Length: 361
Image (cartoon, rainbow, N blue to C red; front, top):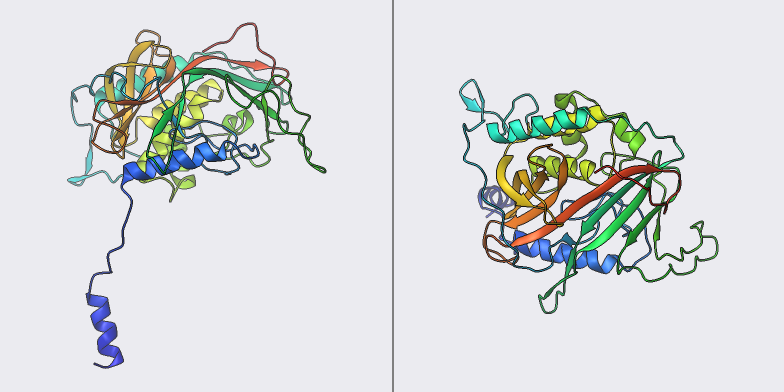
């Protein structure tokens, strides 16, 4: 067989198989990695699908491992509402392509809920913070980490999490969590510009020198398009190649932008309306956040886990998130709740670490 024949045979044969981890195993590995990184030097990072703005030095990556309830077998939220219609529109007899920003491809019930949430967000007053002020978000969360040697998953008890983020990204932020970080950080090394350790146990978060869709500031969010189609296109463009699918990454990114930040009302409304255009978004008739508040939700499934954004059934205010296993795997049986969070309040403060007298959820 000559060189040309060998090349032609190689072209015709399928590529050799290679072992790959299951999607659930990927989640467990990622969770363990993030828990290990929590003990390294703090640095600002983007919130990820199962995490928050946190402390590992992974610019543009996930933050802490996973957001979990107080146990691994929490009660599941109810299944998605029956679709009043598929919501999948067509062009020329063909389904709209995944990632389309021109067609509304979410089921009607989810579209209606996200529209109501958008209307609520649009009616809020604009905080118009000064550039030297800070966005403050008060949450209830619980994280998990996995021991790779034993496969055992350790779940923290639900605890309070407070974060202060510079409005324009130029100043040091602060992260405080109950039961985390000890009393004060390690002393700064020579030449380190990090401020002195905080006696309250809070961690300093690096300034955001280059805000982006994955590491936003209030001022960055204020500059985003308020047209839902243009906004969703920007999100797809800037997250291209990230996540398992473009649609899953778009949904996760919007969730990130809504969770531990404050945005101008018009931008918040546009984010909800943009989410209604993501394929695979459905509605859930009943779900509960980490504080036990029940509400209606919109959801998206990825790797056997359904991520739910929960809203107050009357005011349509964003309450928090819940994540539920929907396919058998390493994370547990279908119906197992593997993620919880609750937003307790949001506000604008003058200094990092200062708690406002009143907060608006």
